[in-house]
Image (tube, rainbow over all chains, first blue to last red; front, top):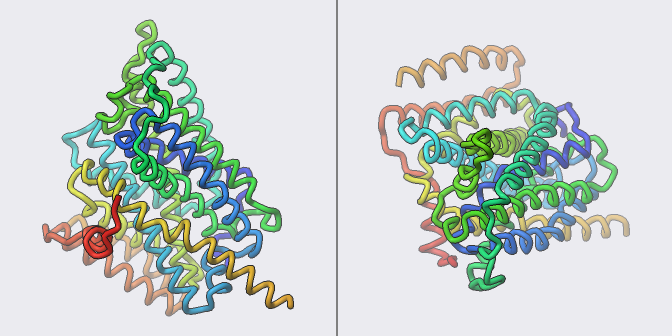
Amino acid sequence: MSIEQNKITNMQLVFILTGLIQGSILLTAYITPLTKQNSYLVIMSSFIIMIPYAIVYGLLSQMYPGKNLIDIHEIVYGKYIGKLISIGYFFYFLMVLSFNIRFLGDFYTGIIMPDTPINFFMISFYFACAFTVYKGIRVLANISNFIVTLIYASIFSTFLFLIPYMDFTNFLPVSEIDINNFIQGTHILLMVPFGEIFIFLTFADNINSNKCNLTKYLLAGLVLGASCMVLISVRDTAVLGDMAELSTFPASTSIRLIEVNNVFMRMDVLIIIIQTVSMFIKTSLFYFATVICLSNILKLRNYYPFIIPIGAIALFLAITDWESSAEALTYARLFIPFLISPFLHVLPPITLLIGKIRSKKTSE
Amino acid sequence: MIIVVTIYSLIVLMQFPELVREKNLKEILVYIIIFSFSFVISLLYSMGVNLPSPYQGIQYLIEELWHINY
C-alpha cells in the first residue's frame, strides 16, 4: 500500500541514508569514554559488521519490490503475527524519535543556552520536523542532498583548519583497548547510526526503481556516513587526546580551538548548525517512519491527521526521558543497544529466511 | 495549561472537520483515540502531574529482570 505518492530516486536514498548516519555524528561522544583513542577502529569494525546486514535489508526489498516493511511482515508472517511485529517496529520508531528530540534539547541547553528551558528547543524542533513530515518524503530527500553536502564540506574544512592542532601520538598505543569495551562500543554503533539504515524499508514503496537491487545504494549511504564518523573521530582524538573522553560533545570542544589569523574564530557555531540540520534529517525521517508505520498497520488512506498527535506523544516521551544528559549517556551505552538489537539485527535476517523458504515452497 | 488547551483546540478545529467530511469512520476513530491520549498526557504534564517515563520500566526489565548488561 502506498500512501505517499511522491517517489524518491535511488541517489536521493543514498543522500537520505548518509544524512541519517550524519545525524548521529555526535554519538562518538557516547563511545569515546569506552574506546578512548581507538574510537575510529570501533567505527570501522561496526561498519564492517554492518555490511552483511545491509545486504540482508537490500535483499528483503528486492524480494518484495514495491512493498514496504509492514506489507513484507504481513506477507511473510501472516496477517496477525505480521501486524504484531509491525506494532513492535512502530514503538521502536517512536522511541528513537523521542530520543532524538531529547538529544537535540540536551545539545542546545548543554552547549549554547544553558538557562533556556529545554522544552523550548524540543517543541520548536518538533514543529519543524512535523512540517517536513507533512510535506512528504520527497521534500526531505531534496533537502538531504543539500544538507549532506554542507555537512561534508564543513567536516572537511574543520579537519583542515585543525591540522596544526593535531598530535598523532594521541592515537598511541594503537589497539590497546579492553575487549569488553570494544564489543560494547561496536554494539552501540552497530545499533544506533548504522543499523538505522533499515528505516528505508518503511518507505521502500516510495523509491522509484523498486525492481533494481537497492543493496549498492544502501552500501553507498553506509560508506559515506561511516567515513564522516571516522573523520570526526580521528579529528577529535588527534586534537583533544585524553581530553576527548571528558567532554560531553568533543566535536564542539575541538572546533572551538580553530583560530586562523583572527579571521576564523569561534567556529563551534558551525558544529551547532551541522548538528541541528543533521539531526533534523534524522528526526524527520524517524517521524515519517513512525507515522507511515501506523497508517500502514491500520490501513489508513491518509497519514496527515496523525502527524501532530504522534509527534506530541514523542515529545512527551522526550520530556520525561531522563533528568540530565549524563543519564542519557548511561542509557545510550547500557540499554539502547539491547533494546534495539531484535528490531535491526535479529528480525530482518529471520524475515528474509522465512520469506525465501516460503517463496521456494510456492514455486515448487 | 491554557496554552495546551488552546493549541489542541486549534488543531482539532483545523483537522477534525476535514476528517468528518471524508466520512472515513476508521480514520476518525483512530484519530480520536490517538489525539485524546496525546491531549491527556500533555494536559497532565502542563498541570505538573509527575508522569512516569516508560523508559524506566524498560531499564528495569533489561537490568533487573533479564540481567542483560555489559
